[in-house]
Amino acid sequence: MEYRSTQEKAGALRRVRRFVNGLGRSRQCCVCGHSFFRFSRFRGGWKSFSPYLHNVKWTGSDFDNFWCPFCRSHDRERHLMLYFDQLGMWDRLAGAAILHLAPEKHLAARIEACRPSRYVKGDLVPSREGVERVDVTQIPFDDASFDWVICNHVLEHVPDDARALSEIWRVLRPGGRAILQTPFASGLDKSLEDPEITTDEKRIEFYGQEDHVRLYGTDLFDRIRRSGFQLSLLSHAECLPAVDARRYGVNRNEPLFLCVKPASGV
Image (tube, rainbow, N blue to C red; front, side, top):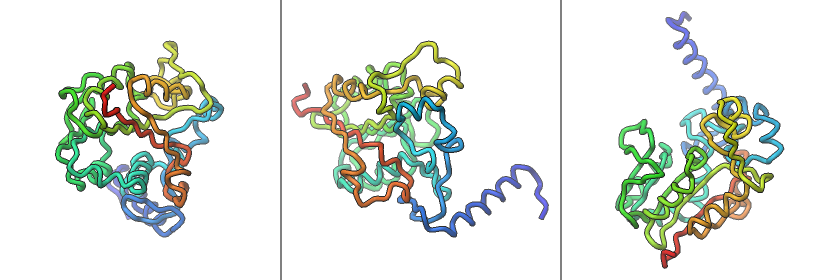
């Protein structure tokens, strides 16, 4: 068989790999339901990341089980969907006003199916139809506008994260909830924010990604609480004891960051 371009050949190879991968049954995507041999790695997997990140026990995405080879869902949205399934959160989204920052495609579709009363999808640089431009440090909505804010792996990209947390607090109604998933290092007491770390190479080495501006330590939890939120860290083992993290391609060490704005608003 002859291919007209290198791109066409690469596409054919991807289809063959996906077909072969689909013959396996050791992994399963909770989004599309396909079973297969393995999820696709992110940048060569966890072994390709720096010794520093290993030493400080970086916790976030599962780099070895990142993309589903069929629907391209990534581990972060799969994990949230599993948490939402187990905790019965989908029912709570029905009729609610929701702000979803940097919205994931598959998670957004599931939320829309819940029929919220208002669903705003926002990103600093919108790349899909139906996504508005929203700067998390200057959210363009009135106080107490939303029942839920979903902010999944966003804060590590934001230079003024205190302002972002303040804005999320402001637009939530009293009693409202925020999901604030953020990678952090359990081996660091204090977040690493070094003004000398400016190159892509150094940010990948110390922060895990070239567009991250810090590596949070466990002081992240106090940062969130200082913003006024009541924070509950719900572990995979606690909430999803019957879910094999490796089979479903999620990081069992990443807890659910469930934040509540007290009903009193203080």
